[in-house]
Length: 289
Image 1 (tube, rainbow, N blue to C red):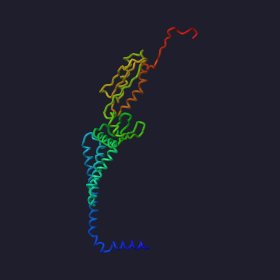
Image 2: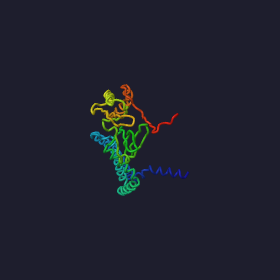
Image 3: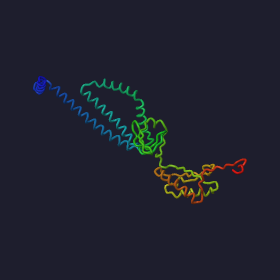
């Protein structure tokens, strides 16, 4: 009960004219500081919005530049803006910002040493975004990693494999190995090998395969398709169909041609031989065997 009475007395004292007269300057000073801090926050938000618009507008003007670079640059710029705003607010409240900067620098050095692998991923991510070896939607192969790029990031790059799996690859791995981009160039070449029998007419086989490729509208005419004798194998003469198509149509025309090979050869009276082995007995077989 005594504590409640004492608490009520303190509240009443706070609202007395003598209290306001004694602390009027401090209250106005605190209010001014809070208003300035609010102004700093508003300006920081406006600066972040302006920075985002300027960065993305600049990125769009640069040919071949991925928008992901703009997002990364904006994230860094926004972080710097808010750090500066925080230091200004602390300075308004009377904190020694120089000592805070010293502490932050020492802490940053310690964190950097402890997170050197993560920092290497950041550096690799920035270099990949600048060098631009791939973009979202490209299918790449990099060592043991392969799939369609979903989102290039600052630490990792996310991919989706052909069987629908999610892969998060560290940027340092992608930057430290050769990247084979299957989607980058507008045209791709396909090589399909099929065998015909040694008893078949070689010129006829080449003619049938050339007609098959020329009849497909997805195969481009320049560079022209061709048929090459790839190998004189044990049981067949192997012919390679070599043709070009757009990257977008590559797998469509690849499976079309492969599915039509058997019927095309058999319709022309040609054979696709299977492996055969002739066994000769030096002394012949014993009688009755």
